[in-house]
Amino acid sequence: MTDRPAAIITGASRGIGRAIAISLGAGGWDVVVNYRSDEASAKGTQRQIEDLGGACRIFRADISVAGDRRRLVDFAKDSFARCDMLVNNAGVAPTNRADLLEATEESFDRVMGINLKGPYFLTQLVANWMIEQVKTACDRKFRIVNIGSISGYTSSPGRGEYCVSKAAMTMMTRLYADRLAEFGIGVFEIRPGIIETDMTAAVKEKYDKLIADGLTPIKRWGRGEDVAQATLAIAEGRLDFSTGQIIDVDGGFHLRRL
Ligand code: NAP
Image (cartoon, rainbow, N blue to C red; front, side, top):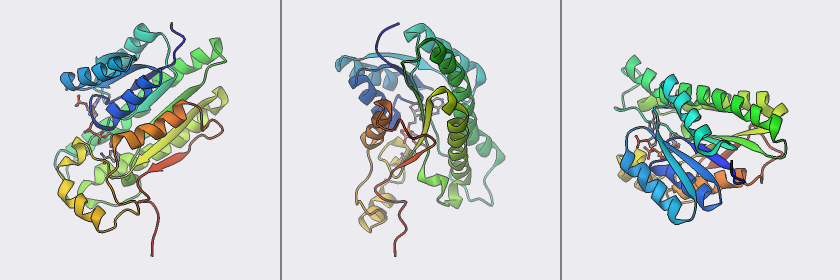
C-alpha cells in the first residue's frame, strides 16, 4: 500500500468523470478509472494521468450489474489496497427521449439501473470497505461524492426516468451521509448544470441558444473541469465539517429569478 490516497471513479473514460480522474491524478491520487465499453477512451484518460506523473489503473465494469461492481472493488483492492474516495459519476440519459405519457418501462429500468441502483449498491460495498479501513487507519479521511444533476429538481417530461433517477440520488446522498457520519466518512452530492460532454452533444444548438438568452446567470457552458474542481475541494478536505451537502456547479441555474 502506498502513502498516496486512492480513488475509484465510475464512468471516467470520458466527460466529467475523465476530468475528475485527471484532476485527482494530478493532485497526487492513485486512481481507478472505471468504464463500461469504450476502452480506447479509458486508456486515453490513463495516459493523461500518467503523463502528469499520477498512477492510474483502468477497469471495465457495468455498474448496473452486481457481479461487475464486486469485481471493480476487488480490482481496486488488488491495485492500491486502499480506497479513500469513491466518485459515483457514471450515468446515462435515456437512449431515446420519449414523452412521459409514452416512455417505456424498459428505458426506466435501464436508466434507474445505471444511475441509481448501480451507485446505491456500489456505495454499500465501498462504504463497508472504508469502515474496515477506518478501524486500522484512523488518521485517514474517507469521502464519497455522487454526481447528481439539476434534473433532480427540474422537470423535463421528455426524460422523466433520468429526472427521477437523479432526484433519488439526492436521498441516497442523505441516507449514506447520515449512516456513515459515525465512521467519519463524508458524503456529498455535486449537482452539475449544463456541461459540455458527449451526453449533451445532441442538444448543443438548443442549449447554445438557451444560454445566450440567459438561462443561466453565468452565461457559458459548464466544463468537466468545473465539476472536477469541486470534487477536488472535497478530496482535499476543504469541506470536512459538512456532510450530505449538495454543491451546485451550474452557473447559477438553481437561482430563482424575477
Ligand atoms: P458522458 O460523457 O456520456 O460519459 C459517461 C461515462 O459513463 C462514460 O465514461 C461511460 O463509459 C460511463 N458509463 C455509462 N454507463 C455505464 C455503466 N453502466 N457502467 C459504467 N460506466 C458507464 O457523460 P457526462 O456528461 O460526463 O456525465 C457524467 C455524469 O454527470 C452522469 O452521471 C450525468 O448524469 C451527470 N451530469 C451530466 C450533465 C451534463 O450536462 N453533461 C449534467 C448534469 C449531470 P463508456 O464510455 O465506456 O460507455
